[in-house]
Amino acid sequence: MKDIEKNLENNFLISDEVLKWGKPYLDNFSRLMTYYKCATMEIETKFNVLNEEFALQHDRNPINSIKSRIKKPISIKEKLEKNKYPFTVESIEKYLNDVAGLRVVCSFTDDVYMLADALLKQDDITLVEKKDYIKEPKSSGYRSLHLIVEIPIFLSNEKKMMKVEIQLRTIAMDFWATIEHQLKYKKNFRLTKKMERELFMCAQISSHLDEKMNSLKKIIQESSNP
Ligand code: 0O2
Image (cartoon, rainbow, N blue to C red; front, side, top):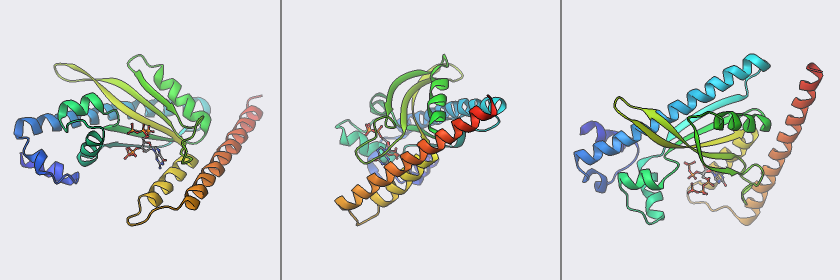
């Protein structure tokens, strides 16, 4: 029990409501979070394999970095409550798609699509939802390719299907999203309309940069493999 409480506290959930759940329920919560962690590990391995294989064939790595995270209990609670669902282990599994999240940062826009296609072709992966914010950026200017996939994890006595959200983006998209997030969520400060417009323009500049880099890569590729 102590371990679970400590684990929850480490995740910044200071909520009597959750501690009131009692040991069996807390155990279920902890077990579910572990399953999500296992699912992100499976997907991360798949991307690492694709990265290695591509490097063998093309002499460069398409993946710059991979980060994974399990949503904090406090964020899980807020998201469920925002959507009027009860904060229970059952609701988490049923209604949330982004408890397990993976961010794959690539060198070029072409790599984003190549990796997404290669992953989705694998026969243990099921696509649940795809949002292409590269082709259709958000009104903020945000660009990334989002996939919600389902993947099996194999436990000692059962196979469990788990959902994972994957965000694929280029270094330029990641730079913009990271800085924009930092600026937007600064305490006691609200961005003005002018600042939002400027951030949108920065997103367009980063998009232009991606296009330039992508076409340079194509020219170099074609001249080295005529
Ligand atoms: P965290 O901690 O990154 O997970 P939903 O997830 O269904 O509630 P929505 O809008 O349908 O909401 O999901 P969507 O559009 O797929 O985007 C969710 C995630 O994309 C966000 O996660 C961010 O990581 C990222 N994102 C979306 N829009 C923006 C944006 O304008 N700027 C930045 N920097 N990131 C964005 P969370 O839930 O915010 O948190």
